[in-house]
Image 1 (cartoon, rainbow, N blue to C red):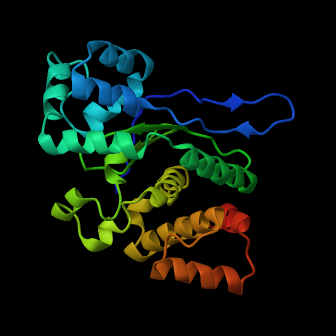
Image 2 (tube, one colour; image 1 turned 180 degrees about the horizontal axis):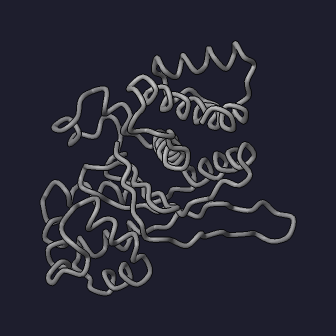
Length: 252
């Protein structure tokens, strides 16, 4: 799993359901549907919508995830289309469409997690979240206040094509249930970076990752991440009677 940082700003999307009702902090953007339409049918209108409605997402996919070239290069659209004509990628696109026809469960989990994070850190920025279909590379792409979820990396532990590319341990994490934990982890790692990272020891770097993982487990009320560094943080928190908010404020 890889974090890709991009410099293009993006719009915060909020949706409200009337006075006195719950506010939805995050509305998942279905960029993947336009992408799928263009890559399976060559529908130029879908490509136009991608470029007009999702310029940052399209640039990130082409330049940072797939690394096909710059989005303004002559012939880049044809290159993008041809890249996905690979039989394996076409199968993956179809499978992603079927498995993720609805993402209401993921939306609900993300909103709950960010609502809890906002209570720990009231000034935290709420990102735009969108779905895309990559090429079996990054799982989650974190940019400037945005999170891109690559559905091709979450088709299930027993998805047949994964056997060719990933170990059993890796496949165990490539499930729908791991989308929200991965999103929260990578986003928090981007907004709470380790200070003076370049001069820190590997132990300090690993411990910082363990702190982020521990907080994500706390936000989700489930132990998704379990490493020796998460256990070290857990023992430290219990010994010193720290809350997740105190760990976030004083130790990150």
